[in-house]
Image (cartoon, rainbow, N blue to C red):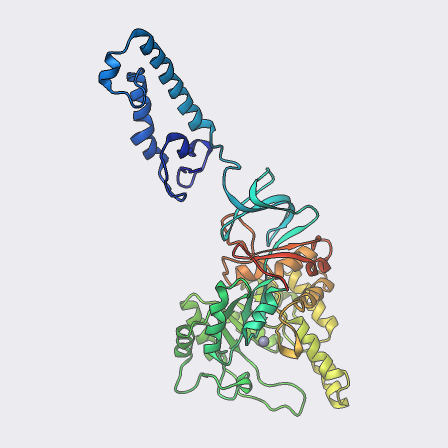
Length: 475
Ligand SMILES: [Zn+2]
């Protein structure tokens, strides 16, 4: 069945079955302005039938003028019939609802759209997109009964370091369709991993490429990278990252810290950090910063950075005034609470006494991390889920749920926890194709056999994953 559609305003009256009008074979995607169609074809045809009611198809005018009275009446009756039938076909033959050829419909499914709980709906997918969301019945070529299940956006892990395609495979198997890579020691490798964005079997990879740092600064210990120096200004450095495909800019402010036998390391000055932020801003790129202390976090927030890649470490707790300021500055925080926990563990569990003492005096405990998270959330500062694999042996897949579990223990409701891995990172990093379930968006979806809004453990019960409308083969 072919359809005409008035651009932007599909209604029952703007759809016509071409087959009923003997148009023959037109491509299914044939699209035409309905007013154009009516003025050029349909209305002249109807006028013709009104003016020459006894003319049938295949009869010449000459034949008609010679036909007898009975034939003329018969012709008149037939043409009226054709007229009425044509109008009837026009108005009723192709009702708007249900006539679309949806590839897949998930019926009666709970929907968390990345921001809110939409309750039970029907969701239709066509090609790579979410075509329709409705409480009305939708029919499709293939149907999945979603009763008792929940449809959520594919998850986003906002802090990883991926090094091989297998990492992206591992992520998507746990419903993580996007990973944000916050430092690569090889930008060629970053380009390779980006090339898997079209692959259904891999999470989409977005990367900062190299982090901004000084020679011998963190994280040059993981591999030689281009650094900011006397011969390369911060602005030129940012330009080089963009030339190499950086999706956003990562800044490091790290003086070394750590237990007493760790050495101080060179780190960027605040004026250099400011230049990087302004340069990223000029290119409409998001800038994120790694800091260790609350004090540095506040300084860099005021320089205009978009967000932080870790929760501040140390024993300081942010004041209400500081949290208010971070909120006013539109700052987001990727806590990597799991990493903080692991840092604590390695410094305490089985560590030498002096390291333990250092940890107790200088590092945030889990209790402090959770209370800071709760206060950040209360201050309405967006939290973006990220757990920093492969540091401390953290995996790219289901381990993200450990991070979400910490947010939950900090007091975030389940819907707020889910937002940290969907709507929040999508908004913060301007990922328009991910993190939400809306009509006309690419279908990046996870069908959960349970209700994660009631129990986050349900996130382990993945029934289906779709990336850009294509079903991910689960291992
Ligand atoms: Zn990291």
